[in-house]
Image 1: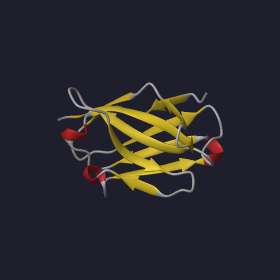
Image 2: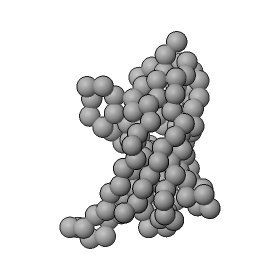
Image 3: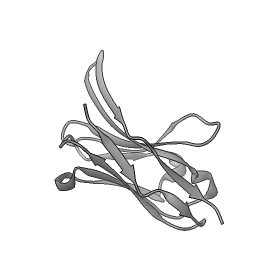
Image 4: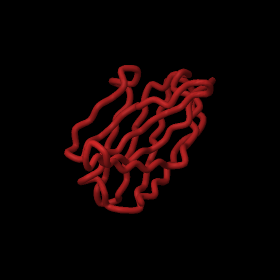
Length: 120
């Protein structure tokens, strides 16, 4: 079992920046894909960004060019750098660790979430 702890959320004005952090209890980045998801009130949880075990990254169209996912293997920490924030980025952001072993066996761990509010 992997424990994930997010931090870094808060209130920011439109156009501002925030950096979210996700600390893992274990050194898992070589075998787990790490992702950031978000869930706004009344909406489904959606994928924001993911970094694969090999280091490749993917982003939701809505955040491309504004958000960057990265990781520090020595610190067992994944980051989400968010720039040019918009009110529609307001949501609870969750860190996820996912490992697909076979088509019928998959491991998933979630953090507790951190609130990001973009408002003037």
